[in-house]
Image 1 (tube, one colour):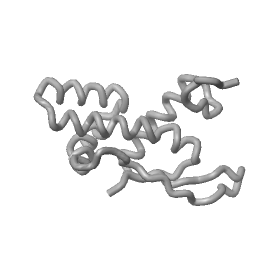
Image 2: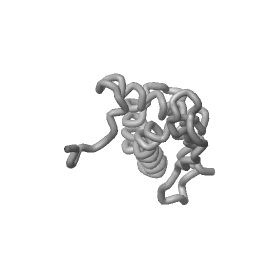
Image 3: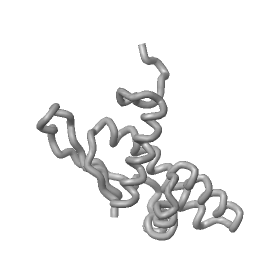
Image 4: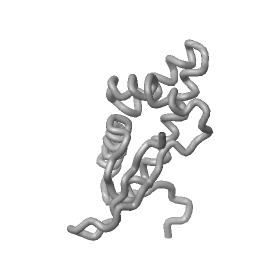
Length: 124
């Protein structure tokens, strides 16, 4: 039984799962839209929204909190370009929005294994 076990394993070991999530979130922020399976999209959606919320709050706080927010995001994304884009382009876009920065659009099953494919994108 999986009572009170949080998160999805996605059929991978811990290191592979962390790397997959980090790469998917980086690509979501880089292209602002990715095509992936429903399980992977649901696994990263909350993390991506949490990072956007932290970046949004970091832009509106004092200097010390802004530096902390940038370092927190940089530790999770591992790409300076993506961190810069997140704080300069993506976070200011959602200053008046209280949450719900992503949208999942179902595309139908994949031909090879019939996995449910979705489009995960940032809301405008």
